[in-house]
Length: 303
Ligand code: FDA
Image 1 (cartoon, rainbow, N blue to C red):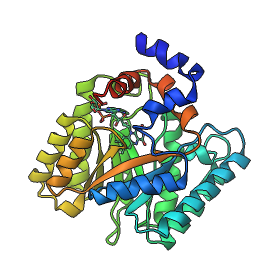
Image 2 (cartoon, rainbow, N blue to C red):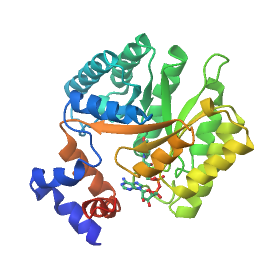
Image 3 (tube, rainbow, N blue to C red):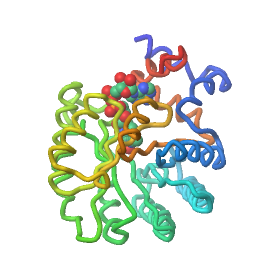
């Protein structure tokens, strides 16, 4: 309840105040901020995936502006020695306004990433976006087998069959590359598991299905139970270190991140940045007030 009240009043707090704790989770406003944060992580042997924060868009002009910002980001990053790739949210390119144009804009980004032998990850947003995001991924995966990946959310009841249905996209020379996360949006119990243990059980079942079918998983979680479960599966299936990676969010459980790196696992951190950090932070908090407790912990120095 307290979380809910605070998260709803946050938009009325001064930005400077909000920035004091948002900066734990957001790399900054500019491309240079993101590059600096990435280099610092790379020095700790951590790869990155860069994400430009965006607000909901209202027209396709804004979608093209977002495409251009990402093109600028890729141009800038590829001139550096940053070890990282890119994550995008389809709604920033008009998924909910004009699906075909959204596909074309995302394709522009994948063309550019492919030119640099790099990779674009399509994040998964809330449930109305899932079918169209999968369709866009399918089309791009056929054209750019090595340069595009998708996110799957273990809390959605449909995820297992989505995963099985996409196995047909595997080919000899290119893996399927899925980031597996729990899922951040509030979804109806009719379509999503809501119990912590149930979500974790499905997470590990989905991950096992990936290992059994030679899918490259990006194991995106900070949950110690899931990390241990993933390590057990890696042993069980004798998966080489090149066959998976762990992923965590910028500023979240950095010690856990470093511990995995210390044991020789590949780890990538999701680095969000951009001018829309304020709207993004407050909107995410309204979507999921449970995040407030993480932020309060960070403010009190226990994050
Ligand atoms: P859980 O929520 O149980 O957290 C485990 C522990 O981790 C907590 O007890 C806390 O200590 C710590 N923790 C977790 N999140 C924290 C935070 N934000 N701040 C501080 N501490 C925190 N979701 C989605 O729907 N679509 C997507 O595309 C993505 N993409 C994505 C990329 C990456 C790299 C990650 C790590 C996560 C996502 N997510 C996502 C979010 C994901 O679905 C999920 O909501 C969060 O990762 C939290 O779930 P955990 O698995 O960490 O477990």
